[in-house]
Length: 492
Ligand code: GLN
Image (cartoon, rainbow, N blue to C red):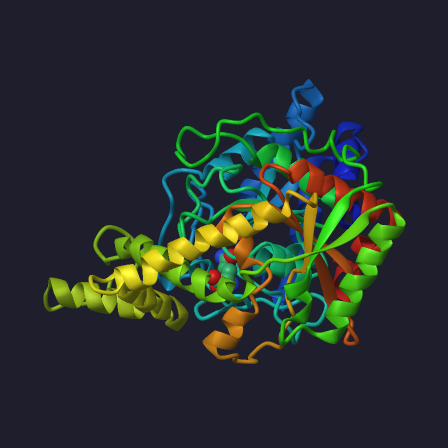
């Protein structure tokens, strides 16, 4: 079969179970596409062909033996932030260019246990700090819809591989929008789960109180399959929650759009910098949901102006603490010929980290330093609580809240926005992480340059099934999620 890459996860699962094709054929098909097309997209940092084929053979044996799960034999790409035993894990940094993890992240281990085939590790912004995946060490990943544009970030590689059909789905992480914004820029569905729903064990830390892994795929249904694997309590992550996991696939039709109250925050649609095409596509998608029976309710989220300053204090503060472990001594990059210990620390960190990571370490260290701690860090934590309360109040009168995923479509590669301009692009995603809520992006059309636009739906805590279900039903009634970039149409 030449078009295996066009099949949904459900079709792949059925096809493998029904022996229409083998996992080896499917895996070889993807490896061939990667070899031919990733020279243009540049999404993979590491391709693990040999291991993938060995896993595929084991999957084929399991299918024959009747011990397969729904996903046995289906390939996946992992963001290079998830530790993979025996395979390099860089987190997009020169600091970890030589790092081979001795263990698997829980998300990776669960994927293996479910029979998923790891095709490789994909590019990202360094340590997940950024919005473009223009990586200073591993190069810029391209947006499959237009190779002169970025795929978004930080999970830009995870988005690009799916949009170019170089993997059927992928893992991403979202600390401030890094699943939703690249999903939006690449025309995909991506789910950021409630904080604590997916284990962070073995996921390289950026801002630990907000980091959360989640699925990126073409449709809500495909995401649901991966959520069934990723979600759950993990004794190795004390912030993961002991709460029953839904069957996200079985629940896909569980929430009625009829009568669903969708909150539209007044403040969100007056943001300076909201692109007219983005606004129009989002409004059209809301109209469609209204036609399907939802009620649109205008709401207030009064803390909107505080989102960017609050996030850009707390995230760098946590990052400066998390990244202090990269000292050139224990593991990772080490500067050559140090004259003394201080020189080793200084040069290892100056040479091993890129500019944006260094900027955030400096901001965070400043905000946490004696004399500034109360004025910046503690104050930001208080504002964070107010932002959370703002959402909780809104959820008293609505079921879900809507927003664009990003104020614009994908930037041009090399656009070189100033840090503040770049940070302002996160306005619609970061409050969700500050509050720990789940949210989903769904593709809802294109701008005048044929770049995808995304709709974001924010849910109350633990409402992943509801979000997937609403998007699934929207996707049954529309076809935006089936559109493919030209490069995805190419055969290998
Ligand atoms: N763009 C945001 C940042 O740079 C979000 C990143 C993320 O979610 N990892 O912090």
